[in-house]
Image (cartoon, rainbow, N blue to C red):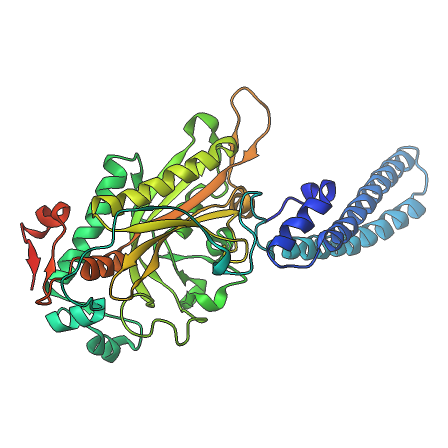
Length: 422
């Protein structure tokens, strides 16, 4: 959500930022809506002043024993006018707030411009592609051959885009989640949280998922929404709060199931675990000081990358273009892991700095040391990592010619010493 004062003071910069997102100029429209609201507020203040003066005149007339009928009629007229204008002012304010909430965050100056992922820029890569002695198979071929990955039974229970993992693969999924959480909490200073996975509409609005992306979410009864990522409850932990500067940054992590309708994914990744309605993910969220959020963004991305380094998985990191970024982000790094079975890199983490965009929507602020007033915090989020896709990467990168899967050495203690699956 945007600061209307900043738009009034910087209309060209606002329009330029939206232009990088492929949107038409909107500053004039926003300023006009704000002018209507401010004009109504000014008139309301004037009416209130006149009401106060008329009320004093009534009291003075009565104290002198004079007839105050005219003054009383004036007060009644002013009251009715005030109520009518008050309703109009609320309508103007609602129109402005709706407009301010409808458009995506403006990108950082250093974000590459482009319409889609073709304009993304690779900034680094780590490791090497595995040397496989046989033709690489995709994860679902491997998992089904092992009898530990069942899409048919999942479809019988829940329909398409679900999976049933069993035996060693179910244990591997659990081992991965525990490994990631222990790394982030034990070495990187994140606080583990077990948040709700059902949230109210205001929480989904706060992170920017509603109202624009309702079709991508699952809505349940009583206005509850299933979370598409733990970013939603973790970021909202500071909604409406005023933090102390000394408390920043706050770093949270959580492992939760995530639910996505994948409304725009028809025909994409129809086989396997890459794109599902339900999946597990370890999320990282930081609440940072505005002056240090860029530094925190780099740190968060490195924490996510470290998971892949510990698992010895080849990956690259790209900075997303203006046309490929998410709604709330002002800059995003995607980490893409190498999948030999697909012979390509696939996203396994997306780490975003949202600036104060989400904080304004949820009113998350901090009080600077030794200063008056409050400022909005900056919010950041990233996957640390998507557990299902990490399992996919292990299957494809650690596959053996006989169809078995070598267990990464760092995970073997969590797998009861198991060195090979199958």
